[in-house]
Image 1 (cartoon, rainbow, N blue to C red):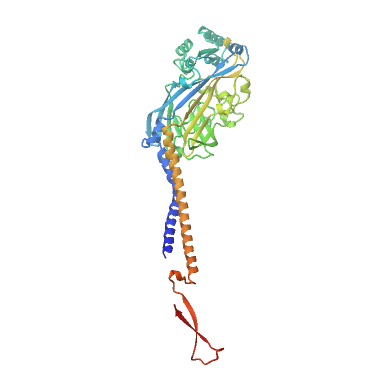
Image 2 (cartoon, rainbow, N blue to C red):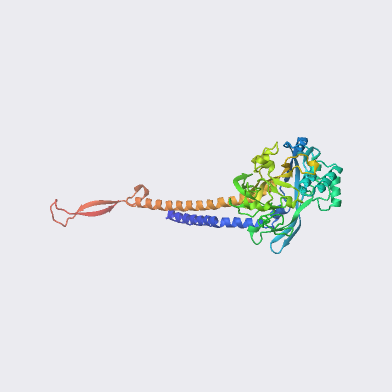
Length: 509
């Protein structure tokens, strides 16, 4: 009786536990996803995620590599350029959003300011190092003005000579990065305002430091989490005006810092880059783990900078040259400037034949972003791009000598950042560890409940089997009454001994 009650109790308890586990299996993912959505929405009430978005806590660095020209005199004579890579010169990058304004349509506007600080301990060399690169003011202007009348070209060439501007520059890294004094620049800004992108010192990154990337308006995800971080407009534009087709002028994806959650291997990473003047898109490559956090790695497809002949949708970015080059002259004051992957990685191999000293590899020159797929938060980022100048001999400009037609690499840079320290521990605890514990708990409850029900069933059937086995016999040493059968003759019946019918009488011992 006691075993029967115990079996029933265990069965009830096991059933309830299994039901609880089953309920957790069904609603557990819903609860986890709901918490992810709740904590990711861009809202000052979401302290952790809002702080991460407003003042990016991840350390970001920009590593710059210069292509120092070893044979400038020979290049002027028509020989192939020979370069050596110098660097990296590493700068800590600080990002901070200002003028944050929330709008009723679940969007938010902001200006993101960036500033750079040289890190000598992380650099190979100092900002005082002198390198030789093409003079963009001279060689770029020559290509831009090659269709002007010869007299005008000769006059401009004479102007270059008057200001001692030659085809190549030998300047310090700091001057080339952040600007140097140039009488030619002062002259052009005075007499031809707007001709140059910068009104102060002329440098490759003079416009970057202590500047913003334009007015972004993005979705907060409050109405639809699938839209979170996606760009609604940039500088009040919903489409660009640089390119030749509506598709190429589209502003797609996010601002390049975070993406919507619940990504799959079929998802892509579209984002708008003001520096590239266009939208870019990365594709899934593989899974991985970093500091215990699962990730998806996304990389640039080979079609990213392919020309219109190799990839028809890119026709709108032309006039094009070889595949692997993006012509950004339309958004860089018509200067013959091209963007590519470093060392012409993933580009037409012919580009490597024009310049000596380039050795592209995926590990060193391919760009990637590692994303936590459940939240859309980047864990490790490495954006690598190269700045190139198209140069050639132009009649009327004696500064161009006999320079062969070439897309000349000048610098390449890598912007990288990764989660580390306290923030990665917090991220791992709340967005990886706790959901994992919930998953384990739900299956533990389900398994424990089923095991308990099975144990109760075994206990019940074992008890019944023992009962059937013990009833036919009486076990004396357990105090159970034993019956004996004794045969007694019936005296009232007169029969012979051979015909006597026995009567059975039970005696109790």
